[in-house]
Image 1 (tube, rainbow, N blue to C red):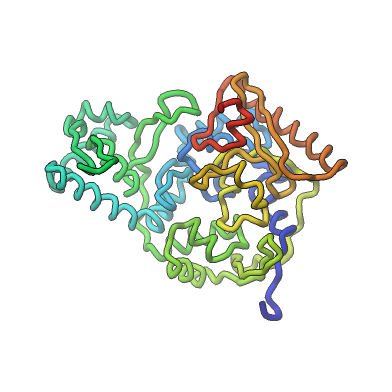
Image 2: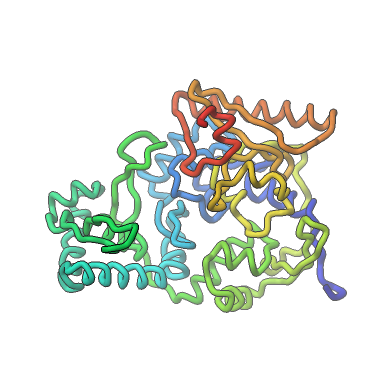
Length: 403
């Protein structure tokens, strides 16, 4: 890039990551809300990911389960809801309106139209009927506080009605009104995921009415969400931003302009340079962590999944072992801002790991010692719980003995 444009190399990008993502020892957080605030969003499609991501970043990991449950279900400092790319995330509750307006509205309109179309094709009742069921369902949920789909079906029997989806197709199936309607209401920001039916690793959950939030202008909400994400993850490219948000490139560029983002020159990890962006005023050099650091991050961790272009922290040759066929990352071992291996939990609770990078003798011994300490830290707070990633990867399967 031209003269006067700041260059940010791989080492500095990794230094920023260690500090801003709360992974370096001195940067660890005091509570789950601090973690979510720093990262903007935690992947929530696998319930265990939220807890494992928080635990990796807390100064006192022993508090992970109790403090995360309190933040989600008692204090309501965090909320689990649909967000970017039609995916479930955990956000600070204060971001509910921003996420809904910036990413949820367009998806919600498509989801509702799709449901009405599929019901009509199957000869099910029309949109007016669905609106009545929706109103009744939300009223029942407000009375109960939290409820499963089955419990709501007791209050509103029409939720139990079924219709044929994709008749005549290879993926034809029966869908209940509750399954599809609650999904639509989730994307629309009217309901959120509540307390699970089992332990913190359970994927069965209750529903709750979403926290009240104002209706924001979509463009302003997009600018705010992008500002927060670039603060945590900048520098990042347009491709990174488009991928993480799920927006059109025109929306990304509009939001970058709205926040006055500054262009920088980036090392992409392969020896090439590209254009990235940081928030206004974030171009100065960032000091790295005072001490080397190691971390064991879960599958779908927001750091491992934070950027589309990952070569600067994850070598391409490691990907076949660490990703599934759909591009979901599994559990990863980190050293000073880059992925160096993977880990898993065995049936007896042991945390096992493997380094995949050739680090050399003295460095390898230092890394092994640090990773062993992190593995013991994870085992200590996970306790008797058994965690199997929702999206399993080759190395995780091998290490866990899961075949």
